[in-house]
Image 1 (tube, rainbow, N blue to C red):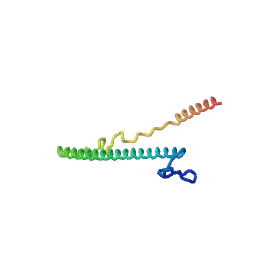
Image 2 (image 1 turned 120 degrees about the vertical axis):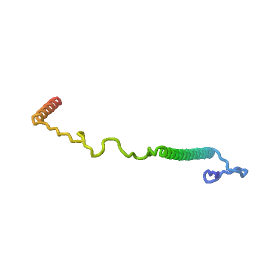
Image 3 (image 1 turned 30 degrees about the horizontal axis):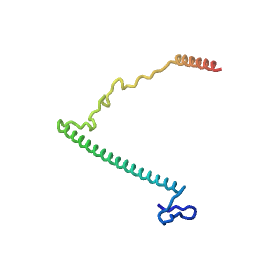
Image 4 (image 1 turned 90 degrees about the vertical axis):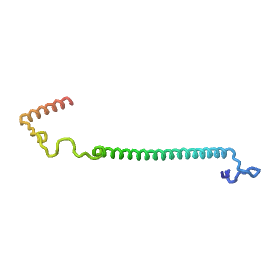
Length: 138
């Protein structure tokens, strides 16, 4: 540790040994030691976390590789048993009605029309409701 200065002069022990720390300098030295200890502990914990994360990732890769091998082997066995298509292959035919077929459901329905008399009755009823609502608001 470097020698501490108080003002412009350095404090040295009478016997010429290491620096003496007194008062505020001793507190700063103790705080500095605590910070260094904390930094070492933090570095150790981060290193452990990184190591465990790397172990987990390598285990995950190993499991993925094993599952891929198992899937490939199962596909190979299924194909050799009955020459059946792989369950992961796209289906040859989709369920439902074939394209291009016609049925009554696919024909457009007739457009509904309203008579002029019915439109007038609905219009008058709505205007009456608006007038009643406007009168209530006053």
